[in-house]
Image 1 (cartoon, one colour):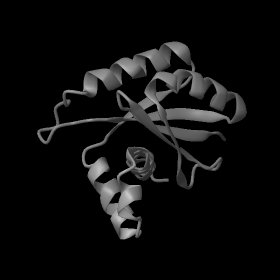
Image 2 (cartoon, helix red, strand yellow):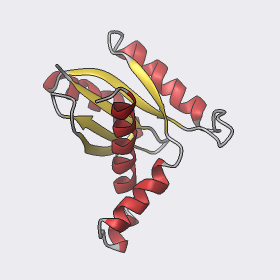
Image 3 (cartoon, rainbow, N blue to C red):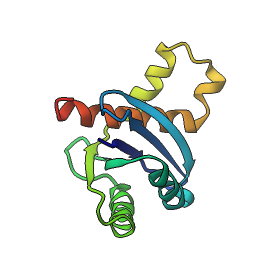
Length: 138
């Protein structure tokens, strides 16, 4: 059984999270510059078996796509073309950044560390992954 990899896509930075090989625990992996995402994933997939990709899809309160959703879908298409055998799923990512920030505060993270945007991206990717796993009953 391979891992599940979650992507919190951003135009500048992308947060990544993965499950353990048994797909039980979601863990923050990395925040990388978005323009290196494909190269990073090619290398990661050579080292670790991954069964599927889960991407956060930004939605508005009325459940329609947000202004950045087309960019996420464009990246999903690029991923599908680059990794044609890899299933790609979408998860509603409303409020993940806000919940990530609240999680950092509750966890006692210092204010200067909370300002590091990459920390929010990694935690958001983890929340996306946890949400997906819960929806699948894992």
